[in-house]
Length: 266
Image (cartoon, rainbow, N blue to C red):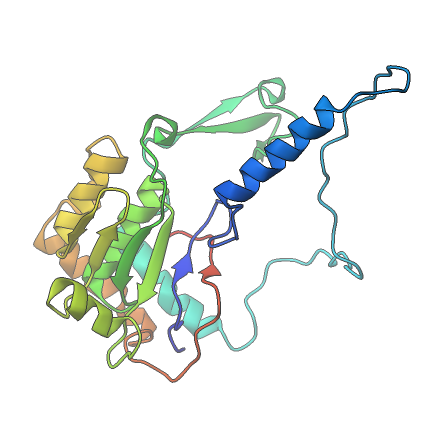
C-alpha cells in the first residue's frame, strides 16, 4: 500500500488550515456593531431573547448508516494480521496516554453527555495526566516514513502525549518532503522534528522523544521507549509484518489540504 503523499494531522482538534478572520475584519465588525448601537432608537425599548447557539446539522441527503458488526474488509485479513505483530513486540506502548488510570465508578458519577464504557452495573472512568501538561499551540512537524523503526518510536511517543502533529511522509525516492529535510537539516536522516512553537529542530529519535517528554509531558519516558538497543530491535521487528509497506514512494498527487487522521500507534 503506497504511503500518503501529503501531511497528515492526527486528531482531536479543529481542522488544520481553516481560514481565520483577519484582525482588520474583526475590528471593522466591532466598529460596525458599535455604530449600530450608537444610533438613536425611536421605537419603544424592548428586550429580545439571545439567539440560540448554532446546532450542527447533517448535510442535505445524508443517510444514517445501518449499524454493522465489526469485521475486517475482505482481502485485508493478512494486512491486519501483519500489523498486529507489533502488539506483543511493543506491548502496546502507544495505546495508553500519559498517566492513564481507569476505575470502576457508579453511573451517576459520569456526566450524561460523556461517553463511558459500561462494565456490568458500573462504568469505567478514565483519567490521565494530559490535562496537567503543556499543549502546543501549533502542530509539531515530523518528517518520517512508515517502515522506519526509529520513526515508529517517535510516533509512539506522540500517541502517549496525545499531541497534535503534522506527519510528512518521506519514503525512499519521495520527491516532495524528503528533499526538504536535506534543505532544512543538512542530512537525509529520519525522523526529523520541527517545533514551530519553540523554534527547535532536531534529528535522532531518542533526542526527539526526550524533548517531547520534557516540553509537553511530565519528563518521563515509557519503559518500552527507554531500553536503548532493545527498543530499536523490537521496533524494527514490529515493522516486519507490513513487508516493507510505506518504505518506497509511489506516484501520487498532493491534496490541497492535509488529511486529518485520528489514530494511535500500537
